[in-house]
Amino acid sequence: MKQYELESHREAQAEHRKWEDSLEGVAYWLGDLPVPESLETVIIKAVHRLPLAGREFVFCNCRFALSDEGGVRIHYVPRTRQPWLITLPEGLVDESVIIHEIAHAWLGHAYDLHRGEWRVCPREEQAACDLTRQWGFAG
Ligand SMILES: [Zn+2]
Image 1: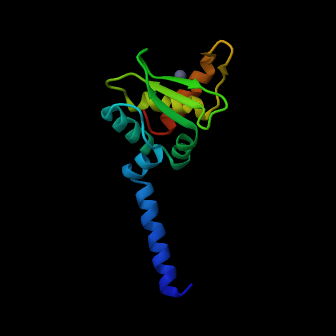
Image 2: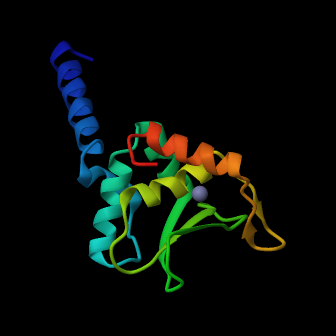
């Protein structure tokens, strides 16, 4: 590569990283979220605040959907491309609540497939809270 080509390549890379780091870039990687726009905005902002590794974990492993059962919940759906499914109620959701569920997924906390329920002990609950705070959110 000629010198000027190398420089414009580097500039393009830097531009791309800047875009990836923006809300727009995060929205792009999250893809279409099947939730109302106000909720979509909360998810994008929350994921945007995560450190890069956390963000990439979400892009590769997590999905989001609307539920009417109230509260933010996490489900593990085995043998799917993005096995962690986070369901959210319509209406106002706090960013830190979403991130807390992502922390459970990141830490690989156990999900009882037979009972279809969480089996998270207080120690694991604490670990998820600690990680959420470590990521800069209210635990
Ligand atoms: Zn929890």
